[in-house]
Image (cartoon, rainbow, N blue to C red):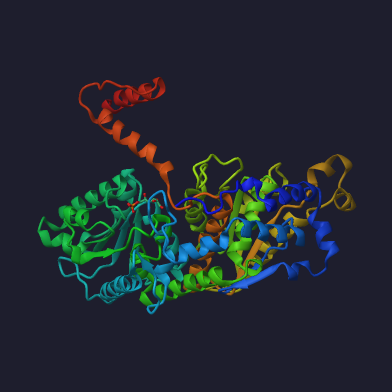
Length: 548
Ligand code: G6Q
């Protein structure tokens, strides 16, 4: 597929207009924008799928928003949304459809890929996952020695790890507490060692999650898991059948590893790794929270999908947030976005979003193969509040860089105690307020601050932020939240005219590592043909590793 919109992004009328508009607006303070419109904080809001968005603390006017929507139209966003939902092969560099939205489509929906309706397959896998999860959770599924499963270890990396970890942490409140969940991803052996050191193999189930079933880290960890299990339970072939299941698209590799394909849960090449937490990759999540909660999670995703697909851009949460991030990135010079959940269960959400956003839009090549002449994906980072306030917020408040923030908060604590929740929410509202309005020299002086100290205590303000407020963190709300960011990424990609669904940038390092492995393992000094730095590091490592 080539771009339907061959006009260079920077030559689009709305882009040129936004550039001029941005230069003017740079000097305008949020204090002024709020003073000019007493209803701004109520006007610049939108709501969908249980999420309320306040975007009034962005440096935008009605004119900015009009131009941003115009830019979306000129970029063909509507046609691209339709192309994704209808199963067109928009991941054209890999010749694949992009259909994570089919993973949460209702049973009676029809979505065609190469003329075949994929929805029945999706539900068939969900039904098998449900049956398996029920058997493990009820104790009907037993380990080799007849003991029930108490520990579930997910082995996977990247898209086959970050989603399950994040969802497990996010939905711990709903999880079956008699089951212990661990996640092993790193090829650093310590990850496996620490995850299993206190587990009884007779009570442990491994889920090997790998779309390709060729990933070095996952296969190495899976082999160590098999060794660990067989060392504990004996080398009967049935041990693997009772203690290993696989989630993959690769039947041949799964059976070559020795896992019975009856214990394999499939998905499809039209699900990208970082978009797969709601596929069978979510098996650990389903085991933890139960099939019903898992389906509520999918419903939340679907509600946001429908909103994204049908709502006018002016009221469309993912479109608005995507456009605002383009505005901040390309017209106000921001290079990052801080995601700051004021909900401790969402502690892994920023890490999850790092992959979703940066692996998707960390691109320099347009759909028609040119080098971009503008910035694309910003750096996403974050920590839960209030912890971050005592760490890096200083730079957001008083540093020289513009760091747009997404605050996420919930009206209800899942387990309320004392005054905690009001204190938590007071903090999130206060941070967004302080960032937007700051504190002027006059205000600082009026507090009796000596003149020499005033410049240090001034807050310029005018720092943009979004606040997302929802009722409480339920599986459904989590689904809506993840889908929101998936579609923000999609919107950004459409404007930047890049393909958010490939990740060729991760290949080079993988290939070089494959070349270096034998150079490290070779008993005799290998002939090294790298640069002088890499050669030297390899020699030094070889020397050090032979010393006790
Ligand atoms: C995600 C990426 C990547 C992938 C991992 C694991 O979009 O493609 O993070 O998920 O490399 O791949 P496997 O699932 O194939 O092991």
